Amino acid sequence: MDHTLTAQERALAARCLEIARAKGAQKARVTLNKSCMDLIGTLNGEVDKVSHCLDRSISIALFVDGKFGSFSINRLEESALEDFIDKAIATARLLEADPCRDLPDPARTARDATGGRELGLYDEACLAMDAGRRLELALGASIFKETAPGDNWTLVSEEAEYSDSVFDTLVMDTQGLSCRHTETSFEYGVEMTIQDSEGNRYSGYWWNSKPRLAELGADGICAVALERAVAQIGPQSLRSGKYRCVVDTECASRLVTPLLNALGAYAVQQNNSFLCGKLGEKVFSEGLTIMDECRRCGETGSRLFDSEGVATTEHEIVSQGIVNEYFINTYMSNKMQMPPNVEDAIRPKVKPWPKAGLDREALMRRCGEGILVTGFNGGNSNSSTGDYSFGIEGFAFKDGRITHPVREMLMTGNLIGLWNSLLAVGDDARACKSKLIPTLAFENVDISGE
Image (cartoon, rainbow, N blue to C red):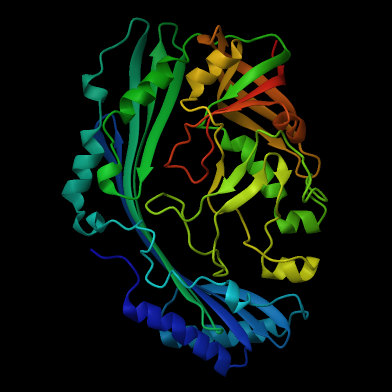
């Protein structure tokens, strides 16, 4: 079944703009979202749950007599929308005037996203999906019934989910903007739980997600999750000290996300960012370059426009440690008197170092001895100072080889200091993730243990 936006739904979005103008809004922007997800969960190779979720909503940004309000509704009948917009405009008029609110300059908006499928992220295989095919995909990758006990462990459970989704977004405004993004997603993930000979339980998770069904490759995912669980048997604590740390690509975004958040104009304007006043300065190691690769055809996370409809561009956010930009939407541009760009990093990627083949094993060999971080357990970072404290899990390694798992360890420091201790950047980022962050290596990282 086709769950993309219908011609009638798109016409209704355009009608919302007409109603808003007729009722007194000088400008307006409408965002129409529609999504559908079908999911089958399995437990130990048997169907455990089935769900179907279809969602539609309209959000409208209203600019009325110098005032601004944003409102949303999921009733998509014209009569309901007319009453909704009438009340929304009345509410907006009660607010304080804000001269900084405006639609983006039309010259900045996307003109190459009219059909929604320009990036090749929609797979028509979704049209042929039915209950039988989903069951085949959900159950076909299971290994629970065929997995024999290991030397010192037994398999306790296998919890898996298969899902396929369709996302469709249309953004229109009263200045002539009309841009659309349509995407499919096929995903399979599993958590394997084992028990060792002493009764201790360990869990390992693995997953994959692709915009095209033929690329999903669910076979083998359970085996990887099981391997990750077994590897955790017999954890030890290490003494506190400074260590070389290799941070696996699967969790490395935890160290990059605070940098991107600190570049947001809201945080900078409120003086709630440790990167305030750093524009154009070299803040991090020369080895750190963060790009926005947002227009790659067929690659998950690519977008031709942001939530305002502003056209995206591929560029470097941080170049060899130098901060090139803050993320500034139209409102913050007017408020801060700075040129606008896009409101966020669309598809950030930490640029690999020139030498090819640097996966986590290669980085461990390069570092020699240290800690391989495979996950973060809680903790936080201070957006104003950049100070952080993260619980970590992973493995100790020596001579480039894993020796044993580690537990109850805490990684602390300051993000600017951490990124200035960057030793190497791998080239093993997983394409299924929204942030393309490869395995990273740092030196002199403060680790608290025994």
